[in-house]
Length: 326
Picture 1 (tube, helix red, strand yellow):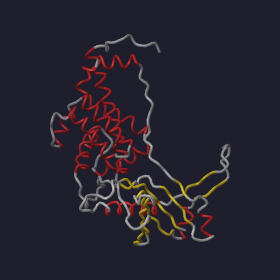
Picture 2 (cartoon, helix red, strand yellow):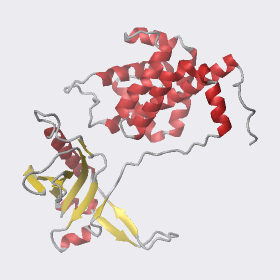
Picture 3 (tube, rainbow, N blue to C red):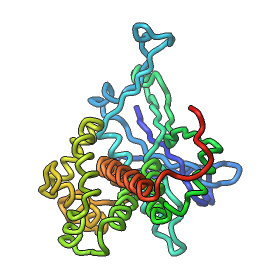
Picture 4 (cartoon, rainbow, N blue to C red):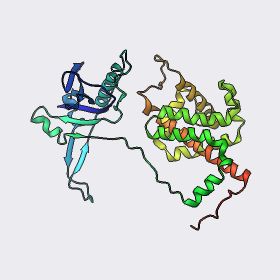
């Protein structure tokens, strides 16, 4: 049986000679698939023949419905991390190869982060391992509904001046949230760090001096303490992965090390050393830094809201139409 990952291709790459281009290397079949009517490449794929020892772990199958379920069948989509990683690595390699052009990258990106999967039986025996021929996925950022009344909008605009000091940091905060939702975790860490750096860094850049500036700010210390307390309870799995990242820098889960870690994290992601034994921030390692991005989001959300509350106390109750009855 062959197992295939298929990904959308973003860009304006066209195949000249045929709607499909194929080439095999080290047991992996690479493919570019074009729309026959335009020859524009729409998908990239990588597949391999599944070793007999892996057939059971990677099978897709239909089972009787679970107890209490209204479904007619229970669908099981199995997978093998080693095989998936090998094929994703092949797609990343293809994406990089397509970037080597004197006219610039030939594709905007290959969406190897959300591949569809296909199970392709090559014999009657294989069919029992491929009861489902394929499954597709899409990345739909979670959007949380927020309601705003006309009255609240009026108060917001009429009191805009009091929040002027938060205009730019709020833009960084919003962009960090968007990039987090889009799976661009490394970029979101930068945006969240800019909020903290601007509000509490005192214009310093040296790690030790930035640490001193951060340590002198009670608001930041309070927000870090809130994260130390709440993050492990709300994000158990992400917390354990975050501790692994911190351990690489010889840091523990305490206020002093967390303060130092957010500075070191930004500095670490700002440079790339391919031979470093530590995990590096690259276009291929976004998911590895998701726990750190989530932690930074937690801190910065507290920072921004705390500062808005402080401004309200300084200026007094926002002026505007009387509040609505709720």
